[in-house]
Amino acid sequence: MSGESAYRVETTPRLAQWRIDTLSSTYRKSNPFLTVERNKHFCVKLYPEVSNLTREKPPIASFVIKLVSSSSLDRKTIVHPGICDKQLKNSDDFVWAVDTLFTGKLIIDVEFLDLKITAPSGGEPASIWTGHPIEKHSNCTALTALARMLTDSIHTDITITTSDGSIGAHRAVLATRSPVFYGMFAHNLKEKELSMINISDMSIESCQAFLNYIYGNFQASEFMMHRLDLLRAADKYDIADLKEACHDSLVEDIDAKNVLERLQAAHLYRLDKLKASCMRYLVNFGKVYEIRDELNLFIQNADRELIAEIFQEILCVWKGY
Image 1 (spheres, rainbow, N blue to C red):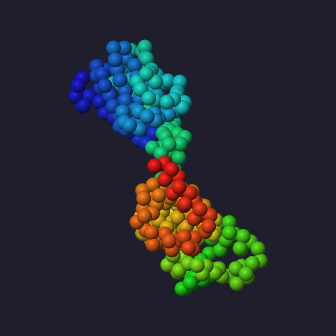
Image 2: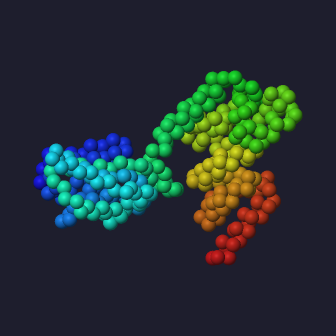
Image 3: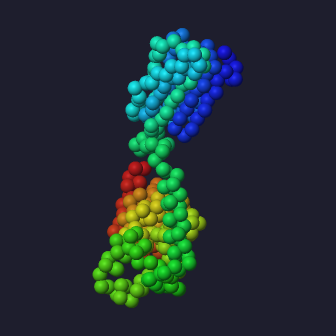
């Protein structure tokens, strides 16, 4: 039988049924996970559809499979003992040879108890029925609500004063993101008594960007605009993930206009990768000769240890030539 009208495939999230009118067919397919074959001897083979994901990270299935003859004269049902946590990579991973002779129409019934896949980003295989969509929805909703607490000043209980204005915030949120803020509110410090935090080394705009990051309401444009201020705040208030993000970003667009400022920041905040990148830009690429005036002014005010490192790097390059 070669026409599609001789079989149908019915599916639900956990159940697939192949309804076959005749056993003369050699190939049956169910989208998206499994395939059934019939060769010279009747057998059922289950394996994933070919894709980059299943080829490199095959799914792990637990299922019950049974064959049901739908003949009105001789109805038969055969149930496989069941498969638990079976990795299905190719057609040899699950083969069920059936000795019973079936006549008439046939139903092949596969009911999944579980199906585990590995995410493209890696990690341990996880069930596709673990509720990840609702988890993602819950996270998005929570972040939206948290952002509104800040933007709409909902029940703020602490005021942050900056160099040119003030912003209301929430002690609990700040304390959960920063051990420094946590310590302020856990002890009888002036910040706790006055319900005020003084961050005079930040403008209200850069402080707003800092709080937006803490509250999960961050925009890429404000990050790029305030990276050095955010780096300073992340170091001061011990927010490691923000500090790392700033570090990685500052390495990516070093040029003659910002290299000295970033070299100073790298030295001050102990950012080895940024410092090495700035040194390489200045010395290995010879940019130190293009910004002589700026470098002379920088040397007059920079930390002596950093100046020594610059000259040491220059000497090492000269020796190489």
